[in-house]
Image (cartoon, rainbow, N blue to C red; front, side, top):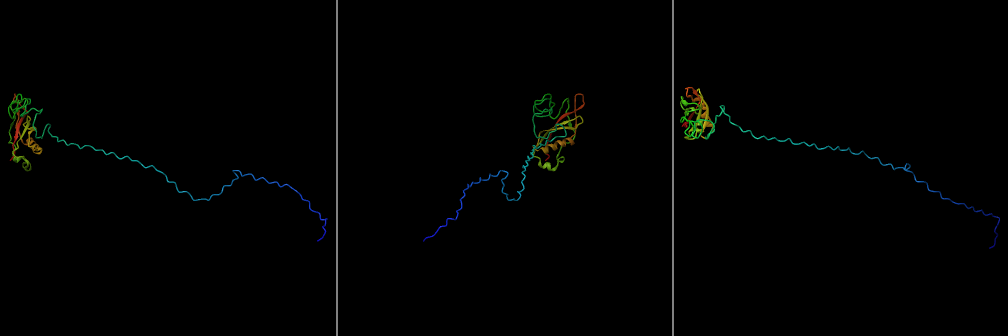
Length: 212
């Protein structure tokens, strides 16, 4: 196949140019950083206030010992105990004492049942002795059978009993104290006399037999 090529067609001139790559943009600063927006939540629960536990000391319990009841006589040195023995009171008795009126080894005694300090004649009972009619019935029922109570009675210058001491009792304080109370209220004496014949206080030994 034959043909012709037209040489009159001008070809375009190629142009050459450099392609420069652009530098990457600088990183954003701290201020430029945009924090992602967090989702808004609900409010937190109310804080619980802590309170200290109150400490209360227990009230101390004060225990006082029981008060011992002491039986006091209206008349000084008046006893109701059914005992016998040495005493610092001068008077009748069966033991060894000072100036007494007993049957023991006392000094300057005046015989059984009488005498006193400065007295040369002992007191004498002028009223009847106590009998069953003088005692309450319930006390007689409790009286130990055949028990005799021995007393020392201090008789003042008027002839009244001023002191009662139980030398030997029944063993029951209620009975012994009743005998002393009756001696105070019902027994009367002719008082003791001194060397000048004047009435003075003296001791008298009294034995109360069982009222039945």
